[in-house]
Length: 168
View: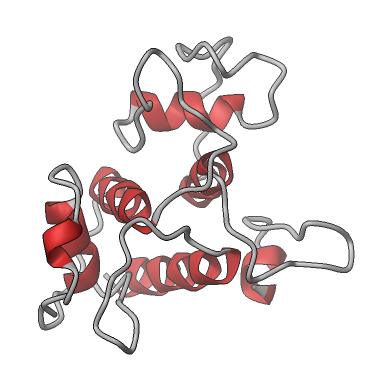
């Protein structure tokens, strides 16, 4: 958390509170990936009806959509304030790493006990994110695809990406 704060990638919820156990929103995760990429593209508006040019996350969401890192939730909406699920996080992370050209060494694949409940659109990304060493399951063998990703989990993943991208 301190490393990411020092590099101006992540911020606290306030001056004195990071809130590590709070869930992260779709807009927050995309903004963190945008900062991590050091993107310089500027956008005048978003294609999503629920993202306006005055929203603090508009640049990041427009970038993520254009680069195929994140997509909307249907009906022309991004739903920026919804908590990002662990399976959505896996998709965003894998697409981000592929966009950035990171080709991480693979770790041994783990069979998650709840793989039967993964959404079809997330299965491949969950597998890749786990093999890339970015995301793991819990001690009980579950991945919990519909659970929200926390701010602490996100910070850990971003540091893993930073470390691996430096080594690659």
